[in-house]
Image 1 (cartoon, rainbow, N blue to C red):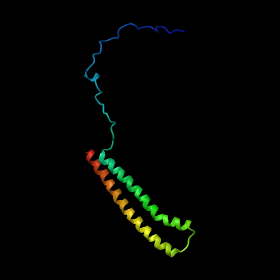
Image 2: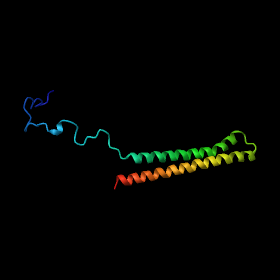
Image 3: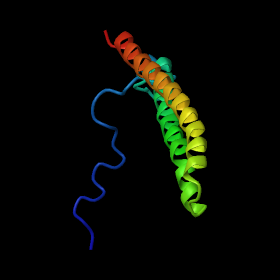
Image 4: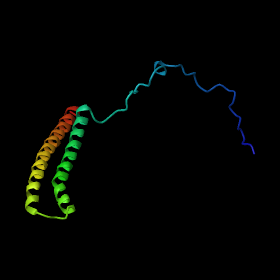
Length: 121
């Protein structure tokens, strides 16, 4: 089954004046960017990485704090006074890591906020 007027318009020139190539026909389009646009600048990305590092350091501090308790339980218990001495050393190390994590987290947050404030007046 053929459609009526299926071949109508073939062989005829297009209606209207011919389109002449303009200056935008050669080369990239006007809104062309070789890299996709990003919402973050370099400082903001550095701040995001610092916040992520601070969160990872907090997780590490928590793991260091909990580690001796897990080892004490897996070891079957035992002398709690010796465990307290061991735990004190781990608690100090955990506190140092937590302070470092807090400093990295705060510096990353401040970097993000100042980068956003500078890029969006």
